[in-house]
Picture (spheres, rainbow, N blue to C red):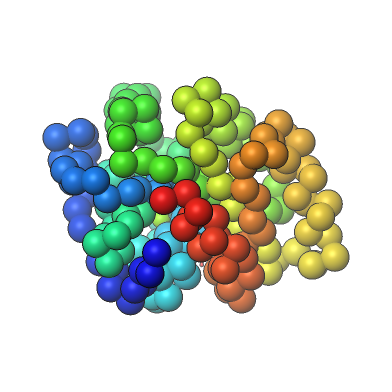
Length: 195
Ligand SMILES: Nc1nc2c(ncn2[C@@H]2O[C@H](COP(=O)(O)OP(=O)(O)O)[C@@H](O)[C@H]2O)c(=O)[nH]1
Ligand SMILES: [Mg+2]
């Protein structure tokens, strides 16, 4: 499929089902803890500086943000988890919103699950991965911030992450850097293969 990635825009933000776009366009959702590099990943894939706003303040985005890419594909930015400074009520609302989307959205083709390459996946990371596996949603694990570790150690970090996640080898695993664009082509290949 030919997709003109220059033709990308934020489409809408949704708190629940009634706000989702009503059509057949395939969606790729992005999940990960706050600050993992989700917005940077979107910006890098779309070759834009600031379409998906990167922010130093984690937990700011509380809605599902839908990005339209050339009317052929959508990215759905899921608010980051693992942000300490939210109340239990907020957290529960957040959980419901994400669960509703992930379990009922027919447009959803795969989830890009972002983890920081430098750290063993957190309990939240593992739970998210298990949740996706349970619902048989294809996953593309993207290990971000690869520029922060020496290339010679990438394999080692990859093994640590895969082991902790109990990684399913049918899923994709991509080492990525939004700083030097490592993994950019691999990420697009994995996404295009799913839609
Ligand atoms: N060195 C480096 N920094 C990154 C990378 N991706 C994101 N960051 C930085 O990490 C912080 C959080 O990134 P952001 O994309 O806003 O994360 P989000 O909260 O998951 O959307 C920002 O300061 C980014 O500049 C990366 O690949 N390499
Ligand atoms: Mg963000």
